[in-house]
Length: 229
Image (cartoon, rainbow, N blue to C red; front, side):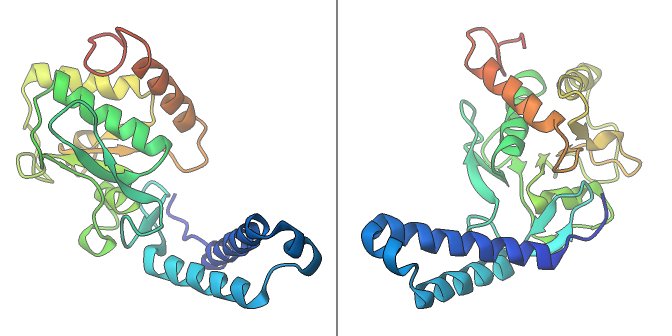
């Protein structure tokens, strides 16, 4: 999981996507002209240049401890965005969009209902790569694949922050995630505030769990807060 990402591969992907976007937009705007003349080279070069700038501004090329790429900014055309947390006072959290978002938001909501009620500001998602320790699980926050719940109440390196019944609920949340999510309190260097995705980007267990959570949320009597999942 600690193998550096290929910067060349990342940049090549961005160029390809930018080129496709430029071609696609021209096809939509003027199909007949696009078919006969092809994309405007100047427009294509400008799209590629902007995509490269975005990649440089957002992507780090460095993986967090769980193998996901750390990002230098949020809400900036990368993968990490401010996302809603429905139904509880924690209105939003900055996490990686898609399956990671589905899973971590579910964990936060279950914590609220089953461990301790949360307030606005209690959950910290993304943190800049420069603010995390790369060798620890907290680095996963920089890739948008981890959250800390009340980090001020459960400081990194300390154990014993939860009552036994709270620990039982935390174990149930983690067990439900079937190896996809890990609690930082179980790490050698404990971080009892931390919950993080513990699989790499290609692990099929993540999308399977996200699909299951989505099914629960749409099923009456299931999902976070129902008491039955």
